[in-house]
Length: 446
Ligand SMILES: *Cc1c(COP(=O)(O)O)cnc(C)c1O
Image (tube, rainbow, N blue to C red; front, side, top):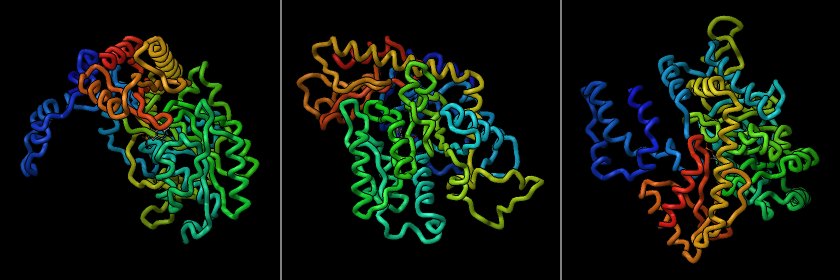
């Protein structure tokens, strides 16, 4: 299995980026309940036939859709080690938890948070942002919110019009509803308008609502814009609001010297959500929440339960446990693939991959700008390029992207810019080069 998979990664360029799952394959997956085992060889042969050829394609350098990381082989090998150990990182006293704590310390240092910051590895930034909303909720409403719920105060959170959809969803799940999000207009660079933000907070406060949280973007999902985080931190300090930064992919720009200044101010955040599985190149899933003041995270999630009793010695030591810091009790050893990736390659190499992705995006933007049939529809601050064939309707544009995906040559996705559909190429994979950008344009033009 290992030899086959390493060959698979090594020959990824010779394969189509993606191909549709044939109906026959879907049908073959729907086998009867396997009462009697077929053996590991048969199971593996079935995997090779039914799964391997029809994966998402994000290993491939031509995959540019959404924001998908390319993964890495060291991280994948760590998954074998983690699976073999079968550690449960909800709690108790063992070395795997120390590895996760070390990943959290490294992450806090990377963003300039204090050494005592706390945090947790989670499925992804959707969960990290959800945890941030719950911590901000407890911070604003006090301990009673955990017994009595959110009550009737009109709590409000603020973010730019370009905010990711998981923030309103988190507000929904936290009991505030999606209307609790104030979407503040952006400037021509897609950055939040700070004057409008403060005016909105002032107005809402004066009319009896209760602002409690501001979410800054470090890399918006549409075009990769980063808000003025320093300016937002100052507004939050003035109004005593929780300052969270959604740094899902853009956070790793802090490792590329040319782009790090964009993130100035992130070190003042109360909490940061980001994904190792995007620009950090760690295999899925590996998100992270960091919290400046550890007591806020602990007080939001810690519980007393007889069956989780803590001791000062023995296996029940080591409190606080990760289950005191988030909603999960049983948790996988996802820290190992992060730790091994960071240790094996080093942060400079990840920063190098970030810089290379941005270089490829800039090259793609330049080629689009000199191609009369195409028009670029947004600035390119980082690694995302949005463009459109001139004279195409929205519907034709959506069809064209599906055609390109089905060609196997490249896999962009779509978004809407100023209300119109655009082709969106997000360069996230460390394997992607200028030649892959050429191939995307060749496929689009064809
Ligand atoms: C991807 C993304 C998210 C969600 O992260 P998941 O890991 O997919 O849950 C949130 N915000 C931004 C800006 C993103 O790009």
